[in-house]
Amino acid sequence: MQASKRVPALQVAKTAIAAVGAWLLAGWLIPGPLPVFAAVAALLVVQPSVNQSFAKALERSAGVVIGVAVASAISLVLGPQSWVILLAIVVAMIVAWLLRMTSTTSNQVAISAMLVLALGASTPEYALDRILETLIGAAFGLLINAVILPPVLVGPAQRDTAMLGNEIAASLERLADAIEQPQTPASLTEMLLKARLLRPMAGAAENSIADGLESLAFNPRKSRHHEELVECRELLDRFRPIVTQLTGMTRAVAEHWEPTLADEPQAIAIAEQLRRAAHDTRILIPSEPGEPKAFILEPPALTAPLVVSAPKGGSWVLIGSLIEDLRRIHEGLTAEA
Image 1 (cartoon, rainbow, N blue to C red):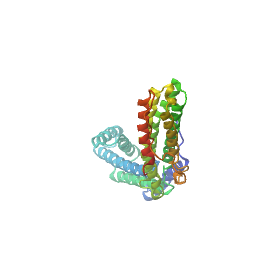
Image 2: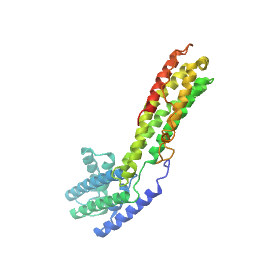
Image 3: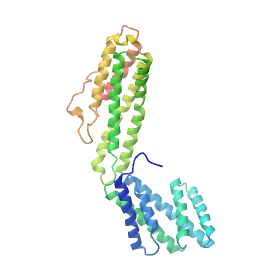
Image 4: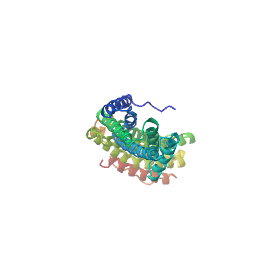
């Protein structure tokens, strides 16, 4: 029944303005019955993005045209009988199915057929007026959504990308601590679970960027915000391979950790490089949307791949694996954006 968060107040206001404006405009241009179709079209067209509004306008218009055509044809053949409304609904659904329309458009076809027969006459003039009403309402709703502060979903993309980067850095530091300090099975399991959460976080960032790009389609504010989403995409592309390597490193340490691991000089060197990698990950992230990246002012700490001699203890397989994964992380962090 309840959504996780409220619809933005601006969208509610724009929807109300679109419905009232479409009602008044259609009533002025097409005298006659109340312009219900225009108001409903405007209500449905105002969406979280201009691109979605455009798609909804096309969907609504197509549904009404087909629904009105079906209702008019059936009424002209069978006359104004009450059962004709039920037949029109069934026929409208069948026609929409034959045309392979989406479920939303199919419902729109049936609703339009029902409303035409239930609210008014079945003459061709009446049907044409209802189609024009719908087109007016859809166009007015699209105009309102595009002109009055059109939605731009850049903030969520920047937020989710930054959260992913910060969690990568935190996971690198947790891994360094696990190498240097005594661990329990519970702490190792917790570390691995947190590392595995990086993949869904990357997926959330991917979805937010996709939503942001969609919000800029047909949006007059596109030129001011497109570059910000491009930067988010580039940053996510750098983070994805690191997520893969880091998850594998964490699993290797969790499964093969031994109390003697911290006695290996190579392990201490790896832990130091992991902390430097965490530092370099954080400075890739803009501190605030629109601000320059911090690495312009602060040099990276991970300046060269780690080179070590062969370990003397029994953890040589684990150390070799960590060195190779760390090399790949180094390449990802130092690559040109």
